Length: 166
Length: 232
Image (cartoon, rainbow over all chains, first blue to last red; front, side, top):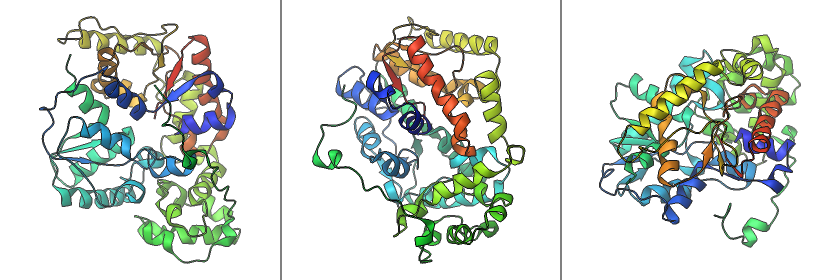
């Protein structure tokens, strides 16, 4: 998001010379074009998907397009039992790790955001949480640990990599 | 591979260029109702907009308020007047003296400007980690031919890295490498200025943000890469 908005703002000629792809565009095209094959037996557990603000609501506002459907499509290809948190997509709640807050000392407020996310997670009782964002990954892990909940958190590209048939 | 879906009217029609001044705020409180931290440590997005209208900039700059907000945009998504509340928060952050920016955000920006990454990792350590983790991948069945490509020219994809993967979470470096390998994708990792995360976005520092984005453009030109994978 920083890179894309920075390129658009300060280096618009970049897009005349190069294409730029999000993590979703790449994974989706590799699957669609048959360049990668995924094991459909590996992730049959109940997975909760969390929308990062930057790829969703903020991309929608900044670039006119939010990446809501692509990650869900990717999960559909090999993980039949994933579920949404509620509310999700443009109405989703921040995990508390956005805006660089993981790098600041204001732990109590960050933990307050985290509790909201934990409430959402508890309602769907997942066995695994999947996120496509480094900040969300760290913050949700830390909120789960504060809540003494033992649920693994994986990156979307991590479950894709784990399911690769090579 | 298309960069976006086939274009429809919805894609082509220009977005409304909302120039919605904070002064248009009707104090409805929708922003505060949606914000997950309203009431925490005095945080309240409506109050922040109100203070901006009253010109109480200095109070905001000296407070913790802009740093408690994650700029998640739930407030402005719901704002009926289209006020850019995260833009307000980031602007306040940018007005804070750089030595008063809390935590590691600005220190990371400074390190990135000096060393090419937000954690100040020396390049020999970086090379060692990338090579070492690459070798571990090659020990796995199906990845025997894998080698992490540093500064390879004419690759299809430029792959920059999140500093935490090179720092404490080396095990998470491997996922994209495996996907690229399985997809027979040609990619390259720059040996210098490999940082994929731009903390100037968080600190409200446009000048540094531009420098760090400019490094991506330099990599593309220098390494003759065809396409960029957005780092975040």
